[in-house]
Length: 322
Image (cartoon, rainbow, N blue to C red; front, side, top):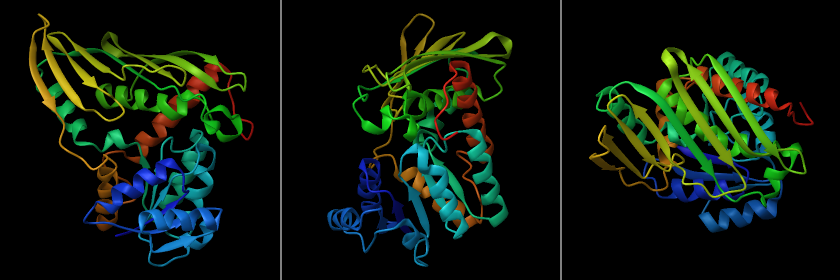
């Protein structure tokens, strides 16, 4: 399938490198608001078509799937543009800024019968099934608690500092901790408690989130744009625990028993970058005529956005365009 990319920043370059190494997809087009930037990108990654407007790309009949790689604040606008031209979309996380926007996009997808998916790549990676299989095997007994943290020193990145671009740690890295918890425990939590510290510009610099589930199950999550963390996810059970190294792209999964003895040490399969799995999931869904990917269905996209809305409500943090 021919892949088109909206936005020519760093994450778009990672997707470009990925698609160029896939044997079942072609990087066909790139669009930027600057034709010079688009042409530079096209030259670097051997892209056939370079467009100086997003409208040109979505109007190209040869584009089979569009990857949206613009800032969070623009996801809604650019997904809507693509869907209204009947173009399937894979949009970088966070899917939108809030649940209201997400609902509208998902409704358009349903009405026009066009795929829209969220590029929360951890949902599509083989490591997810590996972790699910371990939990289902009861090797650690009944899961009772989950912890996850993700932090990088990224407060210098301009878009993450700006409320007008939906900046802050939550939508950029906190979304991974929430997805990790929901992949393990599901989304039927009973209560949510959260606190954050804020930058001078008014976005969250660091945050903590606690989810409580039925049967005394909890998830404790932390994300930061100020500090480099160990990126670990821990799944604690009645007979042992699972350690996931790097929840942002699991590299190693270790299983320990109740005596802290190592039972299993699993390496994840080789990958191009990891992005290839979400692209292939979208292509498969398109071939099936589905409007969603089974790895990250629309109901789950919406639940994550609703969760982040509730968290920000507890902080009294809104973006200026909301």
